[in-house]
Amino acid sequence: MPRLGNALVHDLLVVADMLAERGGRRNLRKAAMRRAVSRACDAVFHGLCFVCTRALGLWRRDAALTEPVYRLLDHGQIRKRLAGREAAELGPIVVEIGAAFACLQDRRHQADYSPPSLNIHRDATRNVVARAKQAVCDLESLDDDQCRRLDVLLITKTRLA
Image (cartoon, rainbow, N blue to C red; front, side, top):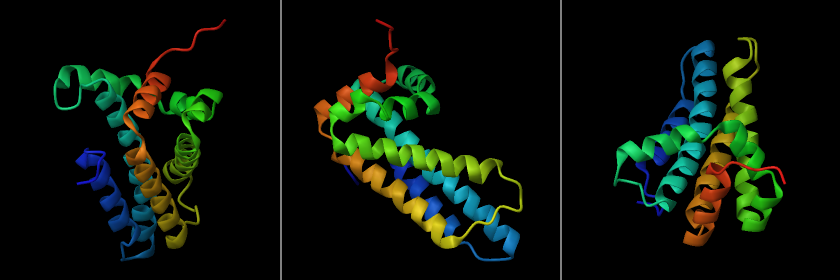
């Protein structure tokens, strides 16, 4: 199993792959590709949640404490924080994770909220899933100090000076 250690993250990527390759009638394929994009975005979000709970020493120790950490993380705040100066100070991999998260979130919103007439293509869907896989690999490559610093960045509240 990869270093990240959260099977859900990798299972969501497998589901995204399967959905991206779904056959059948046109509308079924379009719906499957939309869900593939959503699952790919979910995988990265769960990867970030896992990094935070693991950095706090909570993973597999106390579900009652793990759930609030997951609920504390907000997609909009993650996006904003990962695009900021503090994320850049954590290194170029964190910057790339932030760029991937922003891209995936944009694609997810498009997939989830666009009208049925949205033109969605298999190659574009595969590219989104590949970007999510790379973001998860990037998360897996972070050392323990980067994970702790990323955790603090994502779960703490910013105060105005």
